[in-house]
Length: 431
Image (cartoon, rainbow, N blue to C red):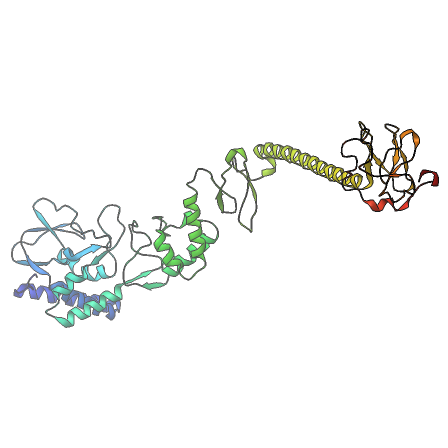
């Protein structure tokens, strides 16, 4: 690396400057700061190199003419901001080189550790820091100084939180978002408290860097790291999922912060929030706060009422029809069990009787017959089958019976219940 100042004049100059700085620190009564300054100054000396001619100072921006045989520190080349911006980005004035003047050089490294110099890159608000690897390499020949400087570097890794105003130690300068143009200035605890409140109050779009001059969006990975161990992580992931779903053309947000896809769309604009704690009715078209005044939902409700009325009437008609069919079937069943068909050819009407005289006269065709055996009485002369339970003397067999006047299937009375004939009787003259 660069060589140490070797001339007597250079050494004398360094001693004079050290003594001057010591007197300054004594006036301030800050010996701890002075110890840090001494370490920084010795490290700074390791970067001294010969310089000739004029120099434009990076700190005061003045031009200094040092003539011949002077040594100046090149440590400024080992500084950069957290974004990696080098500090040689200002143009040297014509006929000069860039560097640090003797006056600014006294406290340059200590002030870098204290974070007093802002990056010179336009738009960047970060403070310049020491490239630790370069400085460590330069100090390898003097281990005690290297270790002492490493300790000072660790002490310098602190910032004051903008929110709680506590001094926060850090290992790696990590602002909330990669796009932040400033150093970390809010502690993780305050960030977590702020983000938890915003997630739980449905302000997910406000999860930004809290620096008032920044407001960059914080990436999801960093948000999850901050919310680790909190139930806000689950809420946040749900909000992200909803944000993804919201890209669907039929997705609609509810005032409660939840949302869903309403596939029926404008054809059926009313939708109910699926959130159990909400269940609010919404309009797909206008999403009015007061759905009672929404003309779209009013028209939809009228259509729905009409459809419900039509459905109700159809259901009632179907019920009546079913009851009628059931009643008709029951009546048919009852008739089949309690009636017989008239045996007369060309008639066949059903006749009912469950008591009284078994001598029947069909009201339709005036045919007379025995109710039990259904044999027709021609010319009012009683006649029975020999199987008739009421027959005594006037009997005939089925095979001997003249069936020319009988209707087809005259004996088939289907489900007729013969127990109905228990109360029938005949006059002796009809037996």
